[in-house]
Image (cartoon, rainbow, N blue to C red; front, top):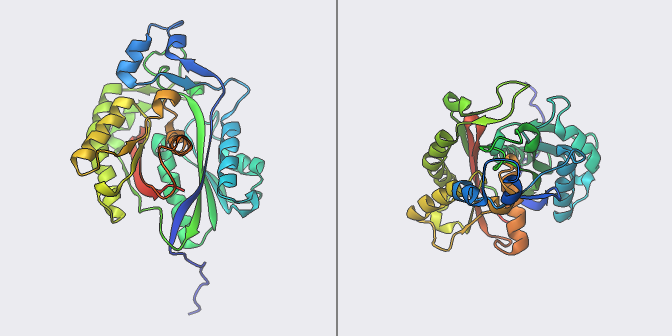
Length: 325
């Protein structure tokens, strides 16, 4: 029997570039208090957010994805023609067809490439990163552009004080490339579909609804053990991790995960992403946004070991260890 020809496989993958994009409009807690029953103190106490960015009608999800993706490609020292595939993680496209990825790829200059969307909500970037890493390792592409992009303000009622104080808009991106020395660890992922109704958009005429307390309990009890499994899968210990970059859902959740990691051996000087304070919850965009901001501010540097963990609607979760580009 004649054997099929297969693509060349590579040893490992790495993140070779990062980029991010946010709207210019900064919305403070005081701004929200002008038209809803809330206050700066109430919001800070419950979710830890001080400011967030809202996109106006002239800035689309695709616009932010193109901006972030273009920056990531340039940061990797590549041109659009070097990119072999584009994956956009998103759950807030204005309509399901066309997908974001094809139009984003074309606008960036990645012509005729495979391009598809991933919807795992706030875990979407980590899902897409895992898919991209596997694609590169299998030889399907040399470089894959992964973008997390959300325009959540399209799907949140302006006067809903439970959600309008939390969700925001933005995009973050990473380029995944082949390397001889692996710098993206195995993904640890899964879902709890029996609780999928805790975060939902019930129908096409509805807005985001979530059972906040139930989600908080799930995230603060279930996510830290998954993050530790990702560390173990990479052949490391918690003490090897330089920075924790979890989905920026809620500052109290972020701090609860960090506390559990430290109690399991993580160092006291573990750097913890707190991008939610100034960016809000941007769902699938939050992890790459935080990485890009942390690198720019000097909180993390090239070669640092980063623990990424995404979690959200589905309920879906995914985590992996990566090295900072």
